[in-house]
Image (tube, rainbow over all chains, first blue to last red; front, side):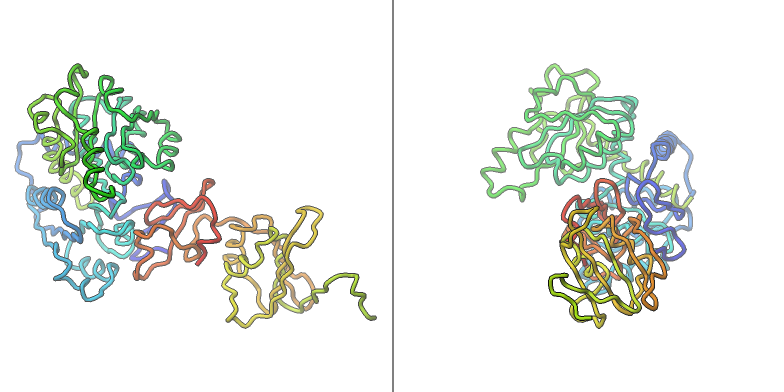
Length: 316
Length: 154
């Protein structure tokens, strides 16, 4: 089952990943997550010039659009003295000629020291890790996993409060939102209480809530954010995607009732932080940007130290 | 001696091959499917379905001539017939008798129901599922099949 001498696909929890791939937050133990966040923190507070990846080459294979993830991986690599090579136009690649992802990965393994992959198919990064002879970092596979986003979400929370036992509201499209799924899973490792607030039909899937409960997380479902907003330490907002609705009218009706406004945040906990993986549409009123609760741009900036820590983990 | 029709249907003993007994009633055809026996394969097969059984109420039996199932094939059967017993027959005698054991990982047996899963593309891989108490967990996309596994057999 193993290709290229790696452990390949083994059952979850027991997945042995000797080549340091980072495919899913589920592959990381709480200790490993803590170590990565600690490392990101050290990187961010360091003033010395970092050349730890000088001479290394990072391949960025993006088969789907990306702004933040791609640029922040590139910036992270540059900040450690490394070089990036990239592919962001599938039309110009051999994939357009029908080459399999497996072959592309084998070829690119010969050009770079690590591959960062974004792909529309779920499990693409797992497949890539089977065929690669260098570490693979998953930068999002369809509706599946996006571990660097989860790590920077956790990092941003930990800048404001310890991760242990916090109360987190997850607002928006919780059915299809992969960032919310991964974050909920990671928070369950820290004994969080999760309050989910989502439109009908976009609730957190039952299989995920069952798993979170098995991990020891408390989960409470709400239809209205105002029921719970005053009890939250973290409000994590995700985009409600227009394409999930039959027409624009029904989208706007639902989207407006899940909008975070300055009025909604009246009387909330003083230490509340509001996060969003971005890009946002109408979920957060721009007026909220000026409030001390708003941390989503900081969260986005934190992509640099967190991805530096990830790159150092796999190549250092 | 001429056989009396009232004795019921006779399935002849096989000289060499495999007898799969104690299959969950009605699952015999799925057992054949799971071990890759289709209408186009050449084996001589005898199938008895919903036969009275003291232990199981109703059971199915499959006899395959001139083919000895290997361990991996046997264990696939456990997915749909966890009580099945396998008898390897040589020269009309039971050479080996074994139970089935649910494997930890199933490769190339079940198709992932998630249309967005990479295992449903032209990539050179087999589907891979981890067998968990709650169902089959796709090791590529994390989808979990909790029911009606037979409808997902490849």
